Image 1 (tube, rainbow, N blue to C red):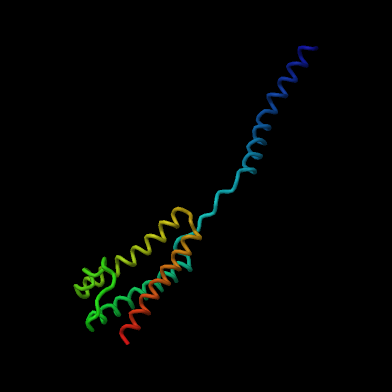
Image 2 (cartoon, rainbow, N blue to C red):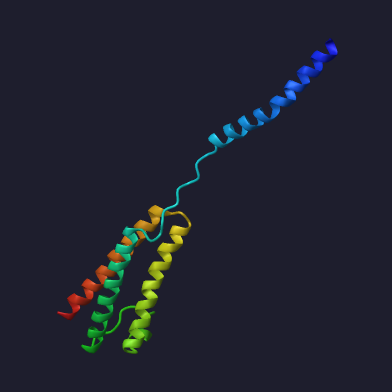
Length: 140
């Protein structure tokens, strides 16, 4: 009788193992930490910001060329060789400036520095706006 009861206990134990294993999986998956949320890069805020930046870069290009035609010179020594070449050079300089801003903000986004991304974008917009305002003031 003792032998039958020990087989019965071992049999019940073996029969209960898959159920225990299933409960273990359910418990483990319930307590997994949530993955950090990732934000989309092309959300509405960035679309608006980059549209504003594109308009500011275009305004900077127009005011720079008008200033060069009136006898003023480019203040940025890195862009000076490009903008003095006319429309093609100005387009290249504008594309480089816009791409640098876009690339910097995207790099911060990829590295999950979302606050730094927003702050950098706003600083770029403020700087470009100040440049355009300065150009307009010089042209008057």
